[in-house]
Length: 300
Image 1 (cartoon, rainbow, N blue to C red):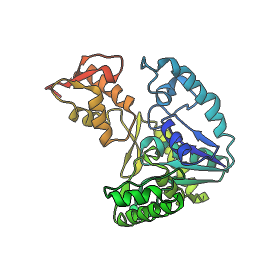
Image 2: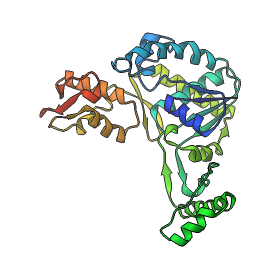
Image 3: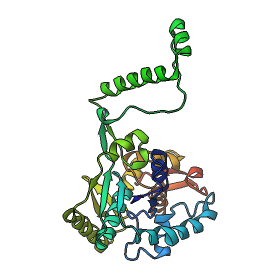
């Protein structure tokens, strides 16, 4: 059994959730760029390693890209049974479609864990096997808690946690990606894991085939489905999030990511292109977006 996920932060979250040893990270963001040859390192370099031109990390880029092609891609071809973790981001949705496509083509069975939303009542109480303590403003109660055996104290805290979760039964928590979840949320989603039947796997296969045939510059989420899009898809949001006064590019990117769960370096690349066509001005041209400032021009 192999777990398949998309992105370093997602893999980290899954490792924190479980000691399951076989977690494969397919780090190529297939929502970005040319899909005509997924083995082409030059064409896929930005989508695998969007920070490759950032001077702070550039020295690591070559190794990172090489590891993906030397280890991750060949490993995908060896999977015999898989669980695919994905959420509500273009990156994870496209990754799921591609993985499902490749597995179905080889007749490999797989299951899906879809991270989207949970009701509070679905979340289990937190479990912590370390030493616990309780604090209160009541000095008498504090003295009692201080000397209670750990076993009794754990039961009291567990009861309190269950009460808190029951009170949240009407609350719905929305997650955009697997990496946003903590161990308790991941456990709740894992309980919803479902095996994909051949008829659905064939549909997923066809959806990816269509996206590859269209080969648009971007793939985005609209009404919960992945669709092809032009390279300027996020430009309106970028412009609306840019002030006419000088502001940090990091601020513009942060506001845009609040609307769209996409790669920050993709938005920075679009900022540079909007500046090149006269819709934005780069006031300070820094080495990366943290050192860059921009402003929106009146004619935009």
